[in-house]
Each structure stands twice: as structure tokens, then as C-alpha cells.
Length: 134
Image (cartoon, rainbow, N blue to C red; front, side, top):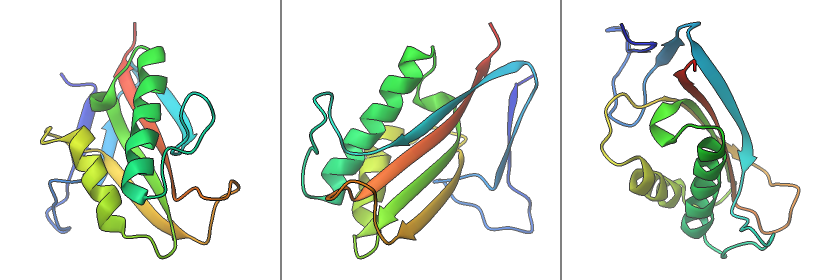
């Protein structure tokens, strides 16, 4: 039996990009990755575009997951914040580069925000992952 169930009620639309809900069994460890943005290991912003920053934010999420013994396929929920006026499609393209065509996409929330604490930041991504308890 799977520890994670992806739920898409017939009364709601379906998408290959997200699930409407995700149920995680108590037999899983949960990893909460705080908001990551386009900052590299030296603390520098990686570039001026949403696509560049989203790629780095996703790499940062993956680094956090790897350090906790998980990887991108263990994510059950994304929260993605994008600065107002930025082309959300560019961020989505960066997401597809990382997620690819995996089955069972996680639940997702995307919101457009007025701005971020650090000037120049265009997105922030947080994630919740579930891995079999070990």
C-alpha cells in the first residue's frame, strides 16, 4: 500500500501539473522546506529573470530535500510566490525542467505578490515532502 495517495475528485478538473489533494499516511516522515529563492551558495541573486531565479530556487529546494534524505519526487505540496508583473509562464517552464513528466504531481498553490524582503527577488518556492519513515 502506498504511503501517499493523490486525489483528484471527478467533480474537479484534472491537470498533469498538479493534484487537487494529497493524503500522506502516518507512516511517512514529513519534510518542510522553507521558502527558497534565486540565491546561490554565496548569497548572490543568480540573475534578473524569473526563469533564472526559479531554476535556482528549485535547485535550492532540491538541495534541502537531499540533505534531509529525500528528493523532488517526494514533494506532496508546493507553494510558489511570484512577484507582480512577472511572466508566470517563465517560472512554469523552469518547474517543468525539474519536474518533467513524473506521475502524481503534488498539490500546488501559486500566488502573485507585491514583492519580497530582498530587492530583486522575483519568486519564492516552498515545499512539503513525505518519505517512508525510516
